[in-house]
Image 1 (cartoon, helix red, strand yellow):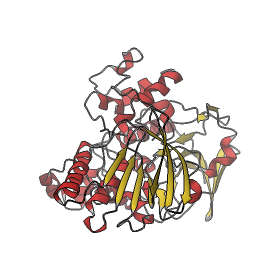
Image 2 (image 1 turned 90 degrees about the horizontal axis):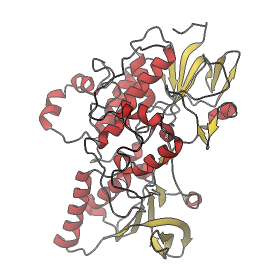
Image 3 (image 1 turned 30 degrees about the vertical axis):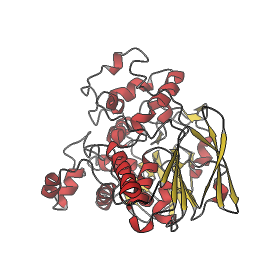
Image 4 (image 1 turned 180 degrees about the horizontal axis):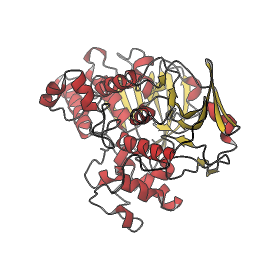
Length: 442
């Protein structure tokens, strides 16, 4: 167990998104652990720029903050529904999937019922001295034996686009906050995943603000669905994550590419909605062809011209170049992990390989400091844990892994979960290919 030190917390968390919220909720019953979590936001918000009215989560509501580790927890999604007196209505509605807005309400409810969260407190620096971490923020200093960093993923935007970010050029995550009027405009959406599809549906469903045209650009060979079939879903089981963790790095890199559509395809219901909206607008209402689909395209250049914005594209198969003009450009180009600025003082002490942190089994990273002072990182282990790492599916399990690693014992029993496929004993490469051998850029 942890050795207590006066005025030194056992754990300080930086970032209060779903991942650290899950960790805080699972720590709540463990009175022997002192912890505090910090975030620069004034309150909990889960990607507010993408809280579209029809957007849903892509996983079961049982994959909430706690349920798959502790189904008796008072911080489960079902506990939230019961507390809000909507459990019977929810059960009767038989939603095929939960709205993202409702899951955000659930997260907010949990955040309001935990006593170890401190919002409106940006962390500016973390360093280590005298056997403890020193966590600095504008309101003071915290001392901790261990830290857990979950500042979230950074948006991926091509470098040649970044100088032009504005109300007419932005990432999809900022859609609700930055979008300018699009009625009668030429709109380009770059990215063939779930976020791009959600933006397309939102645009098409607002009949009072239909653009002149929509160009949907993707490097994929088609507008492809998520592979949500049962055996592929075992990629999001704890045993597969542990199996993946032990594979050679070359095999890991290949599998991440091959399994992309297990995590970054589009919900089938969403694809159907888009297809029906296009049918209605173009054929029943007679507006003509509104949406142009450009597949197999690499986004290679961007400029401001007299007619708006010019997007340079290159066909991945033929190498042919073309330019698309647009008035509004929305980059649904995904996310990536970047070390946060407050970690700069520790970066030269953390081991890296191929520009990635080296993770232990408990999501702590290898560094040159004392073994009893751990640096845990959430959502930064995709290269070594696979496509499930930034997904909600294993969020509670990962939190339990961190807690077990923090306390040096099996506080939460997370082993030997039943699986259909015996991942621990499979030879390398089994189910590695799910039929998609493309290298996707976005």
